[in-house]
Image (cartoon, rainbow, N blue to C red; front, side, top):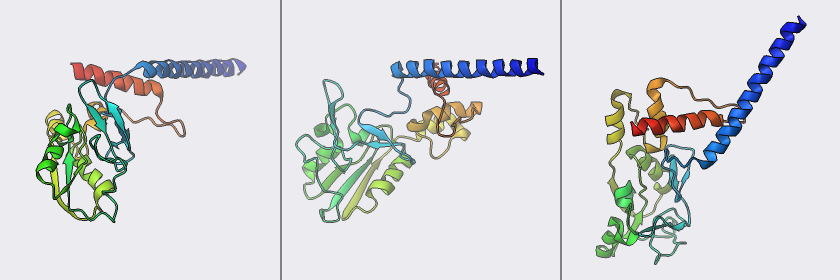
Length: 225
């Protein structure tokens, strides 16, 4: 009996040590792994809803030497000449407004906001307050969710401009496996869906780091192929 007990004690000890070692090694690797899978960029932050991510407040940074991203306190992309503490979303602001929603095209990916479509639109439509609420990689479902969460109660909203490319690419990739909430923010789940891999979330601890590291690298190899 004691031999069987010792065997199980040794077995579980080896399992625990191996698991802890894998977690530590994965933690170190993840610290140096800059793989971009979830489209969470420096100027965005994750959310716990269908938006997946949204624009950070009061952000200002050069993306590279050619262009920068600046955001207001209301999570709108603005110019360096604009007031970061603008109150476009407050009930007291009665200006007639047009809201630009969508992906990288209305956002103005790769150019300063002064060269983006919403900003140029403002130049020729001075009677409207132009709000740039687009975000790169956003899908239709994400844009709708952002409107519901952040702009639904916007006063004096006269027009909404919506430009969306996705979910065309997700549908093209997945076909009948496509889901209405698929987007580049949850692309990892899309890639792994055909393999029926389970979501592992341990109570309090969350997802094991070695499992997260495995998925990230699996997706990266899949994308390259």
